[in-house]
Image (cartoon, rainbow, N blue to C red):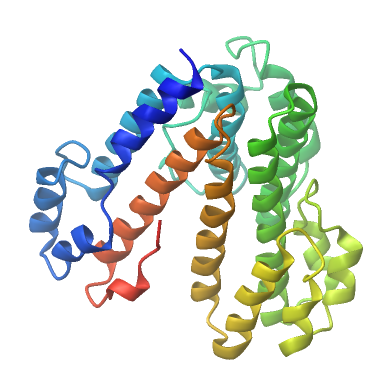
Length: 314
């Protein structure tokens, strides 16, 4: 298997993505009609719940990519972000009694084994590759009673593992993806803290390491608003594009629109990586397209007043 074959297979699959025109057919459907129509359009497998349909589609996507990837170990690094999400869900249930078993089934570690290991403290059934990571998380999170700090601590442990591995495999597309992910997540945290009038100490608790925008840059941005905030990151990686997103936010102060614009920015940045024909870039980009597709489907299903303009572009 080589990347030429993988890219060809992905290009063939991309024609079946549900774009805005196809998704507009689902507007104002009843819940049952929505789910039935979605499956009839070739998306997912029949289920009594929308999440069941989406889960089946994302699992199908992961299995497809697994059959065509020349470097499965590199793609595992990409999927670990889903294990990070599952780990946070399990720790919050364990620490705060927040029982939410809506796990992402597209991670690397079996969710039942992950939950068993975290809840028991016994990691014998976890692979030698990931057991040290989970043990480190257990040590780092011991005694934490703040949900925000708990999430950030778990994320930082996963990012440390991922970036250490990227130093070895030298996969540029994944380095760009995770670097962008961390930078944009930190900017969103900054905006939320400002909106809530929280001090910089609260931001520091939730700050994610390993992005190219360092904590000092956020400290100098913390007192800024309006045009000053929009222009602050302009000299950083993809700074002009980030600045454009922040300028739009300054004009409308709509955080949900900023989140959407950041989602689209990640897609645009990774589309460049999809042109790297000897890397996992095209595979990562296709998976992100499928995630955006799923977000659009959830939005239409949950809000019958959704307009085409509200949907993510991919």
